[in-house]
Length: 223
Ligand SMILES: Nc1ncnc2c1ncn2[C@@H]1O[C@H](COP(=O)(O)OP(=O)(O)OP(=O)(O)O)[C@@H](O)[C@H]1O
Ligand SMILES: [Mg+2]
Image 1 (cartoon, protein in one colour):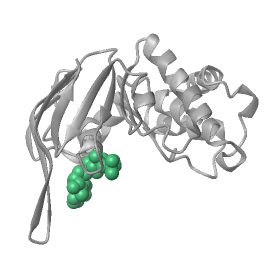
Image 2 (cartoon, helix red, strand yellow):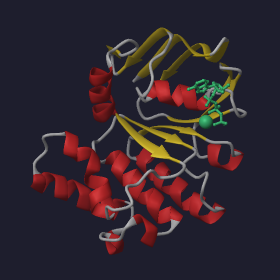
Image 3 (tube, helix red, strand yellow):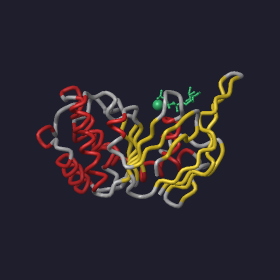
């Protein structure tokens, strides 16, 4: 599914160069559930941005679904992103003016799926994440856990090959975090590939594989 081959990412600011990823090689197979850990600044988000085709490596090769995506122009990359990746963020990233249906529907605007099928998909996802009683609520009318459920449904609506979650429980209390991790576990059990960044051991414990980053490199991988 995902193969990184000696991937590096450097940032240049003024006369300083930061090596955020330093020759990372990594394979993630279909239906894996991977936790990425490591201290602040170790390169976790940079790695997620590269995996999610939000950013390209400075060096190295990235094969996503048998396609070399390391050096593609932005428009091609954004198509690949829409077709392959679902994102979940710590701060949900929902549109405040749209209700639950509208937020989940959003990624389908950029596809040619017809309206009936779109509505059907959105309804079944709303049911799957347990929000059937909140279809027309706006984000500000919902709890953090409910907002994250909306974000998870939105991430799934394009049937992505991979879900990338950057600290999905970072803004949630521990009980709500458990509920959200229960939902991600269900998705994994039904075949979804998930890569998740977390700082917390008890959250990482839900994943089957744990990768620890340090200074832009993989320090530990209990594959
Ligand atoms: N756009 C950028 N421009 C310059 N430097 C950057 C940029 N993005 C990240 N960096 C640097 O790259 C390194 C890795 O950053 P990254 O955001 O990947 O860390 P992280 O592991 O996600 O940290 P945190 O746990 O705090 O989120 C850091 O030294 C950071 O300052
Ligand atoms: Mg980060």
